Structure formats: structure tokens, C-alpha cells
Length: 144
Image (cartoon, rainbow, N blue to C red; front, side, top):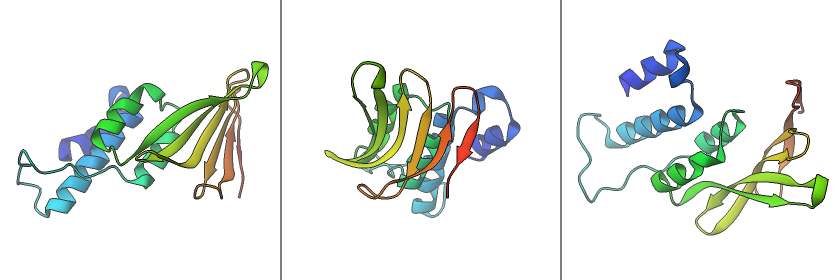
């Protein structure tokens, strides 16, 4: 993880992938849970789950991709990300949600498949509020 943190801070393009940051955060959480960072995990020991805060940060990154979801689910099956499509024709939207086991959680982001606009949300399931809009032109609008 020390080398991973150096890689994150180095500014090299291959270490700027948001999934790399999730992996490093997970490694740090595992070390903190062990308390020493020197002991290796035994075969039966479970990995530390990825936290909700890490998944929210990952989903807020414009470079995040749903192709990463299977890896996220493998390292944290109890809390991961899910995606779906809603709407018809030119009003179709891709959405990302937190997923707690089989239960869908809070809406994190929604993207217009026609325009490329992305809306970001915060809050618990059923009480989400919009915090940011990213337009395909690169313009970003923030909300309180």
C-alpha cells in the first residue's frame, strides 16, 4: 500500500484510474483492521468490504465505468454498485445505485444516453438529492 499511495500521488496516468484508488483504499482498510500491516491474510479470513464512502467517491468520478462492477462485487459482495436503464426512446437513462446484497440502495448517478449529461446524487435511498450535473460539453453545475 505504501507503493500504491506513492503511485496515486505520482500523477502517472496509469495510476489515476478510479478503480486503482478503490483498490488502494480497500488495502488500507484491511491493514487498519489488522492493526499491524505485516500479517498476511489466512485462507479463511474474509476481505474487508469496500465502504459506502469509497463507492460514492468512485461513482462520482467521470472515468468510472460499469465494466468495473464485477470486480467491485467480487471484493465486496455485501455492498457494491448496480446499474440499469429506464425510460423509452430518446428519453432513456442509465442509472447507478448502491446495492446491499439483493436490495437496491441509494441512487448515485444518472446519465442521459442521448445527451451524455450526468446527474450526481447524495443521500439515503428514497431521500436522494441532486448535488452536481456534468454536461457533455465539460461544463459542471453544482447544487447545495
